[in-house]
Amino acid sequence: MNDAPIGIFDSGVGGLTVARAVINQLQNESVTYFGDTKNCPYGPRPLPEVRELAFDVMDNLVDQGVKMLVIACNTASAAVLEEAKENYGKLGIPVVGVIDPAARRAMRISRSGKIGVIGTQATISSGSYDRALDQPGLQITSAACPRFVEFAEAGITTGSELLEVAEEYLAPIKAAGVDTLVLGCTHYPLLHGVISYVMGKDVTLVSSAAETAQDVYHELTTAQMLRSEKSGPPTYTFNTSGDAEDFRSHARRFLGPEVKHVQEINTGA
Image 1 (cartoon, rainbow, N blue to C red):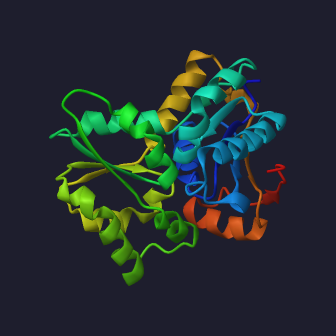
Image 2: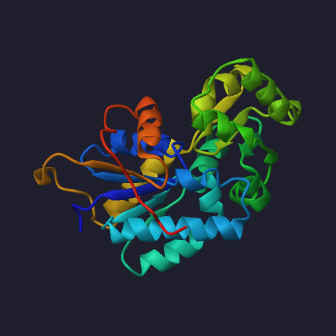
């Protein structure tokens, strides 16, 4: 079981930011990544629909023999995390999401207690970050930024259209005077440059990727499930529900040379 890969999934390529952090921090661990690009984006979908899609993907990863599930998608984390922990925990498979790690980081570094959160419509509407950041003295300002996923998936990280959209989305966050901004979608770190430019140098951007990787390490260490160095080099497997070549070209740009082959898989969703 310890030699089994860590299963990571997202609606598209955004979760590769989490996969990158996991690979960097746990260099002996194998990873199986699933990008549900056929159904991307999850953000505009109703949470019950996101729940169905997410469980289809997680069941597929479990069938492939992963030892842990990482929900590298804020929308899916908001929809299914607690239920997934209960369901797969019975099988001895720990489950980690991306919302709590990002919230903890934001609370640690905010100087004023004024924290902004941006995410998909489903994530913001779910109130998941409001609950995770529900601490005395904190002032939370949230905004949905649905088109950011479209730009990230298309590989568009600069340009006048993106800048105009970012200025419109981020206006209420800027007006609230936040000093910390949570990127509440794993696609958004791909747009770090334009978001930072609009928010200004005094605002710290928080991505869940590194913090989530730390939670993965903690869970595997506590459960004594770390892969042995004697097991040989780790393997990296990439699956998608959409077009494999399209996913590979995007994934290599955002993750790097680890993406060598992508397999198309029908999850039934």
